[in-house]
Length: 358
Image (tube, rainbow, N blue to C red):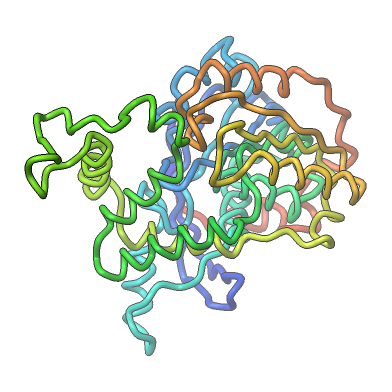
């Protein structure tokens, strides 16, 4: 495993039209790129993850694992606007404040984030990908990649991701309302509830009083066990993630959509993975997206993680997620007919002067 810090010293135009004068990217590579860079796999992390795949997919990536580092080189780039090494949301906000605009966040979209990943790949000399993989918002980004760079990835694997439903938009709205009150902990608690299944909560907490000895039947402010758990998660989160980054990325999630024209651009094979107990991105919605893809002429299939862990299952249920990924990644794929970025970005030799490696 090794990390890369890359600074793009040329203007970067967001989809909104706003121009950033500089973009910094943090990336992590696991495994070894072969001589012709043909064994690369791009991985998109989830909302609050980092480029260090091993920190959040522990047990899934190693030599001989479902994500086999003896065969592939796995590349993950921290999102533009995230908190772990790339240009963060708070840094974007400060740069805006130096101009004529008020100190507010720009709109960063999934398309913007995907383009920064492409810049990093170009720097590494990677012209084609065996797979592009992601879960949750990472799954959204994997699909966005398949739309925007249709000839680059042989196979796109999107786990527990579709355009957000009205329920998902509502939950993100509530989280950003909490953020407006400077309450990142509450925003995280709302999110954690959406990541778990009712059955999992019932099995783990039931109606038990908080395990620290509180008694909600006797004292008004004492909590049930599930309340203590949520408060603990909020306390942990406030020290590890920037409030502005949470705001920016949840907005990017809201804006992600797939028109019928978008689906017609896709040339990669698509494997969609639903989670049986997920109510944030219901398995039925993932299957419906597969049907839309097939109706648009895309080679698409559906797989399911059978777990009671809810949306979090792609991270927490290692055995079941490993089973599904082994099945998907073990399937033969047709060779790509076009394996370069030509037509989508300028060739690497024209970009070298724009970078400095830190």
